[in-house]
Amino acid sequence: MLLIAQNLLELVLKKYLNTNLRRYIVVGGFAYVSEMFVIFICVHIFNFSNVVAVAISYWFGLVIAFLLQKLITFGNRDARLHILGKQVFIYCVLVAFNYSLTILAVNQFTQYASVYEVRTLVILFVTVVNYNVYKVIFRNLKSNNS
Image (cartoon, rainbow, N blue to C red):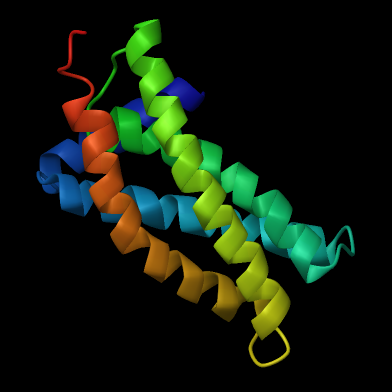
């Protein structure tokens, strides 16, 4: 089922959105909606705190974003261990920064704005940074044969 959804999404993106930036935005939007859904479920069904809900949704969104950005946005299907290892390492450094910023922002600013607004603002900020880092991770390393 996931493979069918991936192929359908990829077909639509390739037909109507032929640039990496557009695909990046659409894939990121999908990851965002997925994250907001997980926050909603965690808060309203499981009664988790905002910080716990965002911590859970962050990791869920992270996996979705990594896979879809790698496969769909940048078309990188290179699964060689040394390439994948470099990609994962650089991605993990980025994740550590994004995660720390996210938890700090939710902890500091949900007294002034909703958890959804705070998370959205953090996502917007890191989106710009992440796009440029992803270009390095998935483009430059995929063609590196070392």
